[in-house]
Length: 267
Image (cartoon, rainbow, N blue to C red; front, side, top):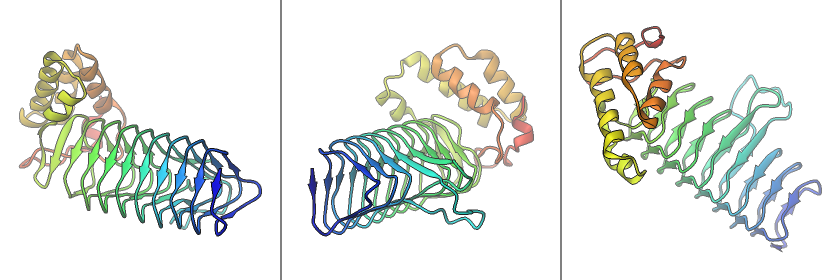
């Protein structure tokens, strides 16, 4: 275990012998750090944080700090970072608000400089957040989503798997496999689907789902029912499950259409 003499580590923290703790890092009580984790320098790890193996955290990042939430009462809450995730400079990740709650970041994520993950967020595996991307509290992000620089996502928004979001303000749920830009949902993430190994049949079903949900002109509720009745592939079923699930924020539409409300989306 390589621990720089300027690092400050609480005696209750569990740090793997194979971890590296660089200059001026601070590790609070109750922290657990797995093997081959690398804290490069000036990293602050707050209490109740678990960092899984082979995570790399760059200077001036903070993980597991108290939430920026006036409802926080100081009760124990938690943060977990999945294995092989890279956290770049000045990233901030806050622990949960409600007693016993947790903020989670999945495996192999890449969080670029100055991005922020607020309290009680759930970030899936292989998610990429570019510089300055911001998640408010209780946001969920599906596997392999890409969130571009300076994107700001409202609290309680759900971002589906393999969604691709440009630098915009996001106030509604983003349907899986779709591209979201300044004019709304503009089509399926075809390149992402190919890279994820989706077959031509699966990609076709996602395209058909996009046309029904966003280009057919019918009500969103009816479009959801039609998509759910037609899908036969596994990605199609996951798309249908997402839009059938309860939504607190409604859905981001195609340009020129009104926002689909949460009530519209209920089956």
